[in-house]
Length: 207
Ligand SMILES: NC(=O)C1=CN([C@@H]2O[C@H](COP(=O)(O)OP(=O)(O)OC[C@H]3O[C@@H](n4cnc5c(N)ncnc54)[C@H](O)[C@@H]3O)[C@@H](O)[C@H]2O)C=CC1
Ligand SMILES: O=C(O)C1=N[C@H](C(=O)O)C[C@H](O)C1
Image 1 (cartoon, rainbow, N blue to C red):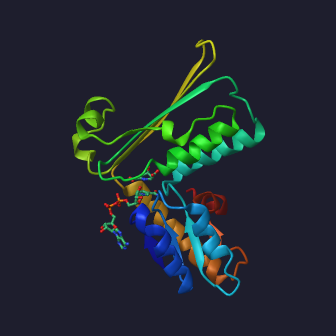
Image 2 (image 1 turned 90 degrees about the horizontal axis):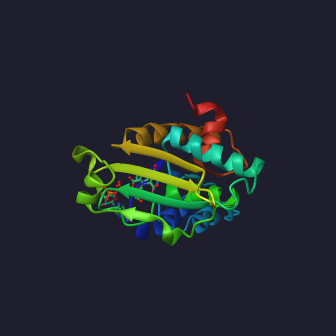
Image 3 (image 1 turned 180 degrees about the vertical axis):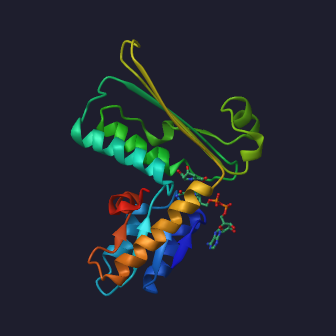
């Protein structure tokens, strides 16, 4: 079992190598071409690789992402006319825009409040992270703060949704569950060979 937390510039080539070697692998690295990664595994007729690829391995955060996607499927356009703004703060060495924010923005878009990815505000300067975002100094080297704001057209209704993570434990725990889930799929010879973290939650791993 391979676990990949590397870099956006490396992850697609890494995935191609894992798939060619018919490995089972979990990818947490964000900022790559996820559609291409999925296709690399799913389209290989002779391949026996199994992959789980997800922009967030934190199960509670994934549950929130799934809830937003379910809301969008149930009530498409429910926030039409609202304006969405998104701010995310991560450790200064993070190269890409939050993959989690991108996934949730896609759900908000289906809810009727679209936002271009390049309008997601990235905070990467430690002084701003402490001063503006309230990141504890001890978490500067590893944190993920996300704030989503929705404001109605006339400004009379406002929503604010936050998930603020300090450290990496929540991802480590989810990654272990993802590995167990994927090993079970492989052992069972499942026809589906590419999964995400929502599949892990649906399989009962939320606890
Ligand atoms: N899906 C999730 O829940 C999470 C995703 N991430 C993502 O994982 C990625 C890594 O994040 P961090 O751990 O903060 O980065 P980091 O820079 O602290 O660690 C990355 C490590 O990968 C190594 N590396 C880089 N290219 C490599 C390659 N081609 N082959 C092997 N090793 C290579 C680096 O030397 C470094 O040790 C980022 O895209 C980040 O956003 C991080 C935390 C949670
Ligand atoms: O780099 C991180 O730390 C994280 N990256 C992922 C992302 O881009 O969304 C998940 C989480 O935000 C932590």
